[in-house]
Image 1: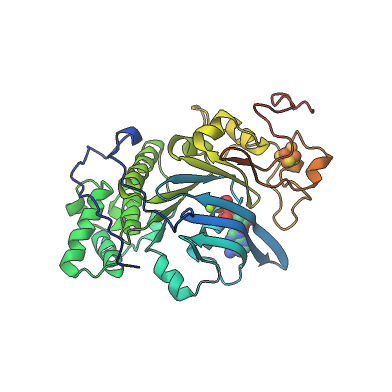
Image 2: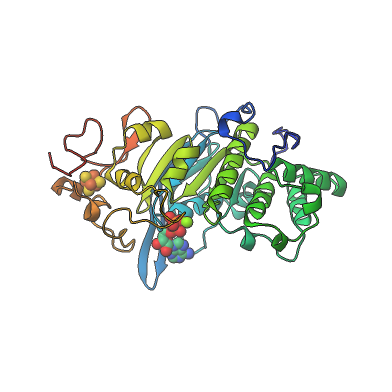
Length: 370
Ligand SMILES: Nc1ncnc2c1ncn2[C@@H]1O[C@H](COP(=O)(O)OP(=O)(O)O)[C@@H](O)[C@H]1O
Ligand code: SF4
Ligand SMILES: [Mg+2]
C-alpha cells in the first residue's frame, strides 16, 4: 500500500453509549478521497464470470456494469444467487482459478482483471477491504481479538509492536466496541455477534481502505444490532471519506442507508440510481416486485420473502432476451431482445423495454399492456 495517503483515524473519544449514531448526527464528513482524475473510484464494465460445474457452464455474472464515486455508499441488492458476492469477489481478486473472468474492473483508474496476484494482494486488505456475513468464521477462534487486529495493523504499516498495539485499541474504539481495552484480551467466542462484526470492521480498517465491501455483513444479526452496525458503517464512510459497497438481499436496508442503489438480477444490473430517485420512481418491474416484498413488521426479520412468482433463472440456461421475462407480467415479444442498461433519466439507469412507474404506458398495478 502506498504510504502517501494521510487518513487520520479519529480517536474514539465521542463514544455514545452503545454507539448508535443516527446518520444525520454523524460528524462532519471527511472529504472523499478522490479517485483518478475524471473517473469514479470503481468502474465495472461488462463484467462476466463463468464457472463450470458438472460439465455445465454457470454464468454467475453476465455483463455487470456500475460506477462508484469516492466516499459514497452504494448498495448492491438482489435475490440470493443473483451474482452479488461473485462480482464483489472478482473485485477483490478472490475467485477460484477455475472462474473465467472477462470485462473490466477499474479501481482508481487501474485495471484489476489480469492484475498479477502480488499486486492484487497489496490492494486487498489495503485499498480494498471486505467484511463478510459470518464474523465467527472469519476470525481465528484460538487468537485473542487484540492480537488479530494488531497483526492486521502491522501488515499494513511500519508501526512497531507498541505503536501497532496502540493503533489496534484506537481502531476498536473507532468501531465503538464497548470496553475496548478489556475486550482486547478476549477471544472471539467471548463476544456477541455484533461485537465480532465490529472487530471484523476494525480489521478491515487497519489498511485504511478507500473501498470497503460489506457482503451481507448484518444479515446474521438481530434487527437492533443490524441497525447499529449499519449506522457505524455510514459514520465511518463519512468520517474517513471511504467508499462502501453494501451487499444485501434487503431493499429496505439499502433504502435506509445507501446513497446509491444497484439492483442485480441474473448476474447483471437491471436498475441503478441515487436512492431517493429510485424510490421516487421505480422503473424496472423486478425492482418494483422487490419493493412490494420489503418485509412487513409482522414478518420474521430477514425472512426470504417471495419476490414475485417463479424462480430466478437457471444460470446455466438463461432465457433468451431479458432474464426477467419468464416472471414478468409486462413481457412482450420485444423482450426476446435483451434490454440494455441505459441512462433514461439523469443518473437513473434501467434495463427494460416496458418500464413501470411515472410515464409508463401501462398501469403497473394491474399489468395492463400498452
Ligand atoms: N465457486 C463457484 N463455483 C461454481 N458456481 C459458483 C461458485 N461461486 C458461486 N457460484 C454460483 O454463482 C451464482 C451467483 O452466486 P453469488 O454471487 O454467491 O450470489 P449472491 O451473492 O447474489 O447470493 C450462484 O448460482 C452460485 O451457485
Ligand atoms: S424487458 Fe420486458 S420482460 Fe424484461 S422486465 Fe422489462 S417488460 Fe419485463
Ligand atoms: Mg452472497
